[in-house]
Length: 490
Image (tube, helix red, strand yellow):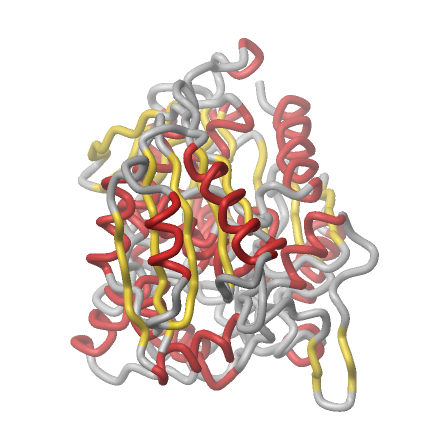
């Protein structure tokens, strides 16, 4: 059995001092540590600094992905390039499988705060490490928090995160971490366990089953997004427009060039996930990076509301906005299913003879969910976000379509008319399962005479520009989006 121990210190330097003591004890072979990491939270800082104690890692050491995910759950910060809360809705349940439950996470979160530090140790249960450290630091520690892992939980943890993953075996091919991207992206991907299509073979059959799965996958996102917005000093206020729930997302500082602009955001989530505050991660990031007001529309979704209910919600809100501000002062967009919804909305606005937004943002859009295009096949098991079409994604498309043909424009707006669309920026990556969908939509937009630009990042999976937010790819993507909006909005 293993024990995950957290030692909390009342000063930002305490954990570092304890780490020095442990290194000394380990060199003397008086203790044996499986793995360790520290958190140091300086007074006046919005977030702590974290790092894996590589010098202490021994047999049974875990990869940076484990510590990144754990610290993401606890402190909601990027670590090893990962923003885990945004991508893994069921992360809390996953850690519970490893013996790290909600009580443990909450206890650490409540105690390790600004002006303190903490040392995280993974040791063999019953080893001398904990007692030795307690003797060395007697009177200098605050709280001691433990989580004992059973042999089965420890084995599961080792299988999932045991050591850095340098390559994935995709059938007969060996796929190394991306070599054409940034170091930050490569390191983040290297630390992610190889995607397993078996993990998404989830096909809810009834409304009750859908609601249960959605609740599980969205678990923890609301709390994470609330902490995320506090760290970035972004305010969020809920509201209703034409009976539709919305959120006003406002950065601490607004760029004077965006003073009269509004970004109308539509969240992704395979048409079923990220409802309410759970969908606020990218709007918060957009508001912060673009220094621009964002209105996030919480449109209705399956299983209760299939297409075109969500689209009609967005159209209703946009019609109201048109009474308050010029269409060209607004951008409309989102990632994944949000990109799909953006296209469907613009098609409906044109049908109604209404003004369209000044610019569109289509982040790896699900513009064609009909299983058409090479990347559905080529990037299966490589895209670490979507992983595979078969299973949960297919079920999401089916419940959204509600009996319609997947090539119906209300399901896949790529097959609708794209003439009259405003200038559009599309983003994707070479490991994205929606690479073909994005590229084909870009070409069709150009053929329709639309000003359209596309960014394709090497090694990037579906939405990695959001999730690996410390990477140059992410910074570049949002900088390019900002420049695009400044060029086209009025």
